[in-house]
Image (cartoon, rainbow, N blue to C red):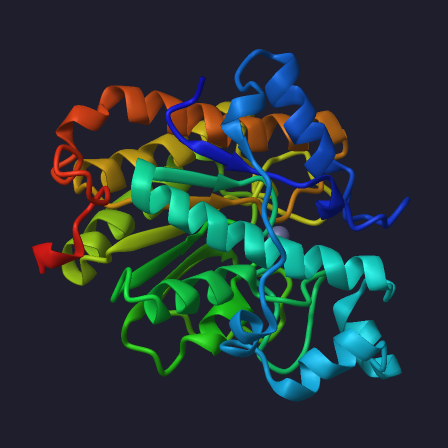
Length: 323
Ligand SMILES: [Zn+2]
């Protein structure tokens, strides 16, 4: 049994068929976690779809209406780059509910993993790059609205810059956005995150980690978030179709683990979501995402729950009253 929950629903599958976005990966990740004996039935939590109230904290009423009524323009669909369907819309609402559930779990257990989500290219008023609804943004504003957190940090390690995240939180000082990505890649227009780590083509494990980890440490020290949202992209991997970095499977797992160590040392709970994964072999994409869960398990064991300040009192992983 895992020391934290995995949030997953079969309807995460966007049913895109042969599309470059391997949406069957969600199902394959959950299946592999069970098949490898990493997780069992009681580790999984079934999410509910986010409410429209939750969605509307991030997205404009016009965009929500277009999605709900199937009235996207041709240009909307071109930007979104996935065919419209009601199932697609349901999957995005569910993914947002999943990231909310993972955030609530993380608050209790120190980690909470949504085996979906990470749709970081969605803007308030339009979708882009396979992302219609910004689940992480929705979850952050829900947690803030519930008074559970006052400050959140997004650490986005997808190979593509987190443009939607940067745009949503551009004027919000309570959310720190950090994105490490390949500069010479989608999106062409990159609105400024609080910290953008722009990498040259072909960067491999050592240079990547030497860039990311000091920046994570510095940002955590300065900003001191109550909760971290970790967008764990599988696409900095060297064997991918839509990326130009050169990380190995081991390097990616180390990336996850080292970020988690920095969070855990400071007793800051971490919500993990998936993000892009376009390995030539879908098994590699699945393994990279499974490794994120394994990294969380290892780091949780390394920094056990007994160190949790609020645990004995039955309160959350990191009491907000610590401020
Ligand atoms: Zn990506």
